[in-house]
Amino acid sequence: MKNVGVIGGGAAGLMAAYAAARNGHKVTVFEKNEKLGKKIYITGKGRCNFTNDCSLDEFFSNVVRGEKFLKGALYAFSPQDCMAFFEEFGLSIKTERGNRVFPASDHASDVTKILEKACRSYGVVIKLNENVKHFRSTMPDIIPTSDIVDSCTTNVILVKTDLSEYCFDCIIVATGGISYPSTGSTGDGYAMAKTIGHTITDLKCGLCGVNTTDIPLDNLQGLALKNVRLTAKYNQKLVFSDFGELLFTHFGLSGPIVLSASSKINRFPFENVTFELDLKPALDEQTLDKRILRDFDKYKNKQLGNALIELFPQKLIPFVLSKAKIDFKKNVNVLTKEERIRLVKTIKSLPIKISGLRGFNEAIITSGGIETSEINPKTMESKKLPGVKFCGEVLDVDAFTGGFNMQIAFATGFVAGNTID
Ligand SMILES: Cc1cc2nc3c(=O)[nH]c(=O)nc-3n(C[C@H](O)[C@H](O)[C@H](O)COP(=O)(O)OP(=O)(O)OC[C@H]3O[C@@H](n4cnc5c(N)ncnc54)[C@H](O)[C@@H]3O)c2cc1C
Image 1 (spheres, rainbow, N blue to C red):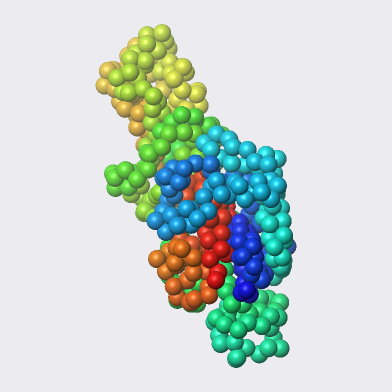
Image 2 (image 1 turned 180 degrees about the vertical axis):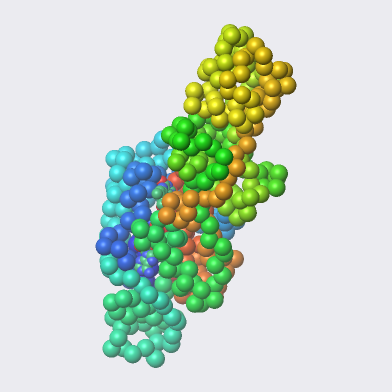
């Protein structure tokens, strides 16, 4: 039996604690907040989309960074294993559009309750309001025994919190990233990892809104477009393309396809990134042109701004026409063929200038983190210091929305806890 310390009582840390305790180890979780899983409460808009009931191939197609590293963990603890775990501990679950799995109650708090129940059923000690400051490796015989709570015999890791000092045979760092820092994820694990020689890759916002410079936001704010295609290019090279829902906001763009795009463009200089919207992805240029000709015939004596009302929401028309450089007030019957073709091309590929991402206060995930080549993917153990493991968002791994990020936290946490000898 090993004495195991887990730093962070979020998704990854609690799963790691459960997996280690289930194998007979003595486990203590340190959580600096007054309650466990503060971030879990706000996931999935308070409903917690905790995994995705898909095949592993599909899962990996939704991973943005760390796909190869994550393979072992996802095979060891698949989305279906995750669902079985929650059901075994009494959670009723349901699967929605896109295989997204939620608690049937629609309460994210139930996910945290189950994790806590699983931990407590194997005797995990949970220390709330206790902030881990740092840890270091030392020989057991030089630890001043008066300062420590438990005694260890081998591979001793000395953990210092704001309240006390502890020694462990093994520690699991599950401190999360730096997005939504108000939930407790303030990047502490990066500093801890650096002290033992780990590399932290550049930290970028993932799954967040995008600031734009050329959208008349006063007019468009609040407008949601369903079934549009967003394409992102860096220096004219395609880096992202997806179909779905987009939202105009007070800062620019948000909505599912924009969040996904943000995770693919966050490492490029924004001045060289372009967004293009295909507002009518179901129609090719020729079909769209025919459709527009039909509408123009119907509204031939109207101004152009009033002739496109069957094609677009009213609010969007001035924006599309200004991008096509056509006067909104021009009469349909004097529009040239050249102008009409320009309109068709703009509808199929409307350019939007972006100026940056929203920032970590609003990002759903941190992209970047502990360099995964420095971690053993089969055990989550540091290659720099034996006895220290890392799991969850603190690692340089991230994925699109759909329950994939929580599943990554659970799978890496499970492997970290389950592979302590
Ligand atoms: C608004 C929002 C919605 C989201 N929705 C979803 C969703 O529906 N589905 C999905 O898959 N993903 C979602 N995510 C992402 C998901 O929440 C994270 O990927 C996941 O929680 C990461 O788990 P983690 O355990 O690695 O880190 P965290 O959940 O961040 O947990 C880390 C814990 O460590 C504690 N801690 C940090 N430092 C210390 C320290 N020094 N001492 C003690 N404790 C410490 C923190 O207080 C925190 O409780 C969402 C994220 C946000 C912000």
